[in-house]
Amino acid sequence: MEVVKAPDPRLRVKTKPVKKINQALKNILKQMIKLTQTFKDPEGVGLAATQIGLDGRFFVAKNEQQFISVVDPRILSLGKRTKKYFEGCLSIPNMWGEVRRHTNIKVQYQDQTGKNIILSLKGVLAWIFQHEIDHLNGILFSDRVLQQKGQFYKYTGKDKTGTDTFELVEL
Ligand SMILES: [Zn+2]
Image (cartoon, rainbow, N blue to C red):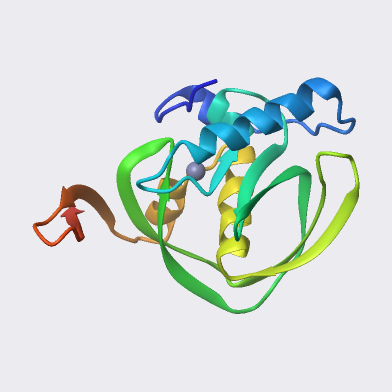
């Protein structure tokens, strides 16, 4: 299992619902968590099916110290408030951009055991869910940056003090 990088067309697939969770999918979800955890700098906090070249509505996401598996997610409602976050993606290495997303969302999904879950999310996890659900619809954060007329930044390494540095990308 490997992370698919842009502009691979597999990242543009609008995925199909899973419906029934079988052992093969459970194994894939476990492997996806392991793969995401291998990314340390920047840290991997989420990985969607399209990012490993699969056509299915599922992803894994870091929730505080643990990873959760999310199958057939649906956004039930979006809060009114939005906020800009500095966002990156394992499929678009070294590129960052500001994306405006909803700060509070309510979602429904199945976990890896098929249990139906309804959650109200805020903060980082709400942001990860919106980023990953975009992936399941073939949308990348760079599309959102362009739509919102935001800026792209290229990661240019650490300076002498160990601080990450970025360069504005002129489009
Ligand atoms: Zn991503």
